[in-house]
Length: 432
Ligand SMILES: NC(=O)C1=CN([C@@H]2O[C@H](COP(=O)(O)OP(=O)(O)OC[C@H]3O[C@@H](n4cnc5c(N)ncnc54)[C@H](O)[C@@H]3O)[C@@H](O)[C@H]2O)C=CC1
Ligand SMILES: N[C@@H](CC=O)C(=O)O
Ligand code: NA
Image 1 (tube, rainbow, N blue to C red):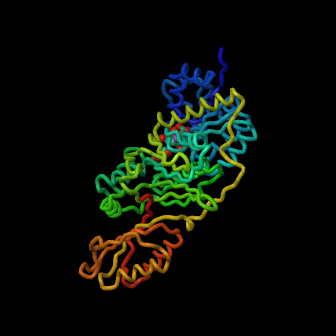
Image 2: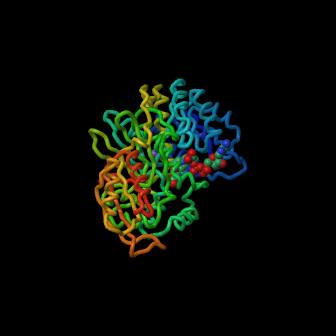
Image 3: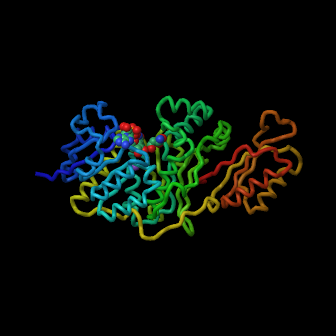
């Protein structure tokens, strides 16, 4: 007869109810894969009267979280938020129970403390669901690529903003219209700023960097820009150059540390990430020996996210039975997070200018003065409503790679020129 491991589920919402369903429906197969029977011992909810569907037995429903945690071998936290999730996970790990969570917000803010606690108590803390939902990405970074050197990770890790940008690209729609539609479809978080201001992607960027570079990083070290400044004109200009705008989470190892940033980014339509449509996620990884890899799939949704939770649960059960929890997520070596000013990036600028002799030369001189090399410059037409079309023009300039510090100084100096009537767009460019 196989061992039984008691599993407490904290939170029975979109993901939690799917976890309960899989534990129930796939019980026999899970026992075989885990090497132990995974028996749901408690389901902690706020409203004990609410019906949780056929897979959550009524007698297991409780609002007594401490008792549920203390009686469990494995704890699944799917409530979200910082508190009380942090206190409950702390309690579970202190008891020596392994914990599985999808809580990116909590781990991106307090991961280091919780990983240390897991290690001190010889318990496992797993969180594959927290980044890119169903896509196996954290374990590939931490384990499959452990013998390689990861240099860069670029991900579309927020499904709702990808849905919005994709729709703008396909239909030429305005941001505000598509956002309203995404909200009506339930794609956006209750507080849409978590998605559209880039905070959700930033939490995931910190976790990707933690796994890729073996050091603890937190969300406040990630330079974050959302999609609210992306206009239909930006999308159209990108399209004219066979490019597309994606909200990317980029973490990169460079001399002296790790660079972490989230921002709308121009990429070529040839890039594998350009083929990620709708609310799907994908993570593009570069490693010294493996070369380029891409992981693609559903980044959210009850069943897909529950798949990642269950993978962690089975692995935690196996490790717990073997008495060998894995604590290699963080190395002993601290790696500094580099400021955004040191990021090496390319810029695409849209500049409205007076259409007069010598204008291009004066603009080019400013770039040269700041040490920023221009890759391409073209006149894209006549600008903004209200300007004198006969006496003005719109320029599009793509730079070669430079530090953000130099690029920002260039933008500031160009703005000062009397022949420049406005800089209407500045976007970073990745890839070729
Ligand atoms: N829904 C998704 O597609 C994804 C969710 N996640 C993460 O998974 C976690 C769960 O997400 P969802 O299931 O979508 O959230 P949800 O909002 O549908 O469910 C959370 C449940 O926890 C309950 N809860 C909250 N605080 C509680 C407390 N103090 N005591 C007892 N119950 C409490 C809520 O009442 C709710 O039923 C979050 O951390 C989320 O960020 C991660 C990836 C994708
Ligand atoms: N709001 C998130 C949900 C998953 O983490 C998203 O849009 O991807
Ligand atoms: Na994942």
